[in-house]
Length: 482
Image (cartoon, rainbow, N blue to C red; front, side):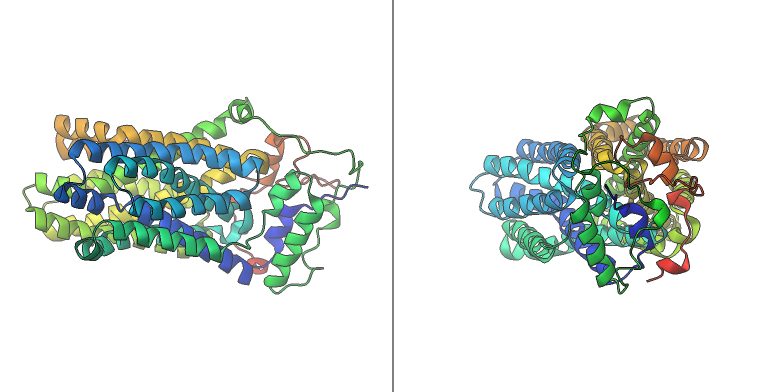
């Protein structure tokens, strides 16, 4: 007799408790240091240029290698997470960029630093994919928006503190101190999450039912419920077949381009590219836009600092409203707001309006980024979930490699209006597509595209199909309150 664990529905029925909060904190710490290391470039490169350690050409190569490493890391994480396991990929990526960050602090030359940065960026790019995937697989859908918001807050804090500490540490210790802080912090986070369990859904998809059951029992115990409460519903258990003869099949990546999945893949690609490009165009070029409008550099940086606080405020708002509205509806709302405020922003001239509209724009863009990257893993079943998310982030990271040239061309050809309105148009398109051709993330829909034998996302009920619902639109019930 072969008893499937039915990890997906059972995890959803376990109330959010100590385990979920600890997992979210440890995942968010990884995201924090990932964002910290990813954004220390501005201060570090300026310092290197000033001391003669680097040149403009080498600085440009440093940035290009970083973008390329992030893209490679995203693709690598997808393969590693689906093939070897979420837990191993989770720890490997953080250890990789933590160790290499410390090595970078000792780099004897800019050429060596660039090589280390390329390898380090692979771990950084992998971490982004894995963090969002872990939230998808462990957190019940009715509370997932809150935890995605938390992840976004930590990412925003990593960006903000990287700039703040760079202002203090680089003059006092040199640029090497920034890599030491990032590396030590990443390794501390790695040590703290060394005993995080493997995803029960992944274990079940690989036929490792006993291990999956043990993890579910552990989660239930840490969340304050009995093992009986975490038991699978009788109607959700498939007891046919011989367990000794059953072996999970490895699904090739070409499944992402199959007829049943291609629409999801294309939507994931478009959503991720829009998230990353829009965020970069808005947040990365704001000081330049201000100077173009006649402000001094110091005033421009002051305005930018005030507006960038929206990068934390947006995900904070997500924590309180997304689980009430549903993730898909919230994503559409923030996409529409990003398009509206991006369209309004170039027309603001009064300082108070520049700050107010800019703050709201950054907050909505940050919210869209958080929900977009967090929603993509839900498009795919367990067997190829990480490769689907990894492919989308790889495309988005490759887009970022070319984004400076695209933004610069728009800026030189059409000014601030051209850049902002182009970004606004992207948000309009992706929001409309999401509304018209929204991807169904219900268990029934995932069951139709899951490979044979992968029952973790959609158990077949012999009494009939479960009531259809979209995971991204589900509202919290009493059993999910934590």
